[in-house]
Length: 364
Image 1 (cartoon, rainbow, N blue to C red):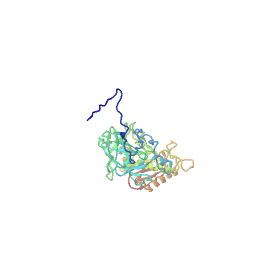
Image 2 (image 1 turned 135 degrees about the horizontal axis):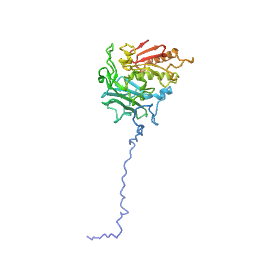
Image 3 (image 1 turned 90 degrees about the vertical axis):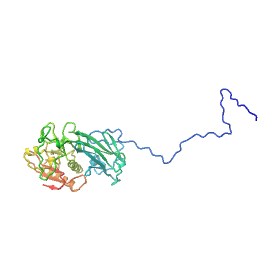
Image 4 (image 1 turned 180 degrees about the horizontal axis):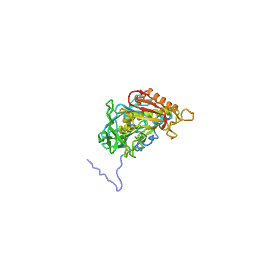
């Protein structure tokens, strides 16, 4: 057989024959079922912090319209349930917890057009330790710190860009009361006629927490006891705060431009309650579950003129009473029934109404 040598010239490389098929280049296959690019996180640049003002909504928030501008501003597009029986429809609320308490949170309802739907995969809980996705059954379990103080939480809707901010107020537990006092602040003895337990704990009212929102229209400082002390302590009931906010919302819907309700008296220790001559051992004020309120946008310490007769008085306080009655009769799920009382003016103060969230209807 004849062998033919192959010679390569300097600087040249062999080329493929014109009869050879070119080597095909590889291209990744395309598919019409590729996963879509996830939308940007509307909360990525919104810091988690204690709510001292109504939380700002991300620019991308898509909210359902509400009948009144005030409701549109304060109500979230979804509602959460806390510890099974506390329903929260507002964009901010204070929760009271004892150290180490386990708190359960779940999405209870979503505003129309998804009423009754619970797309929990679109929600998450943001904590100081990071974002917590919902459990397989939906909702979250979060444990309060062992030390008293405020902690911010936020339930976020990735779909709507809306959120509910929770100012968790971790208390000093009732067990820390010694000889009827907590750190020198006189508490006294609880002797309820119906056998109710005393409050689980007391919030330390220091400068860090006084201006925190407990609801869109109320701050913690409004519920301070009149009893002197440094520091001071108080009990606060979330159902009361929700009820007061519902009354304020109805006041605004009525066309009364009140930023808040003036809280004349809220929490009282049993010691202070007896010192002012009140012997009612079962008063809901002792549990932080009652407030005496009126409308005072003028700042004169008296009920404002709502009737237009040029002076604030009992007729105006009765308007507020009827608004509070209407709120309770409407039976919204976040409004707990309770006491509603009317008090006439006397020589030292104007008229006011009493509101509590005892769980059963009472009128006087």
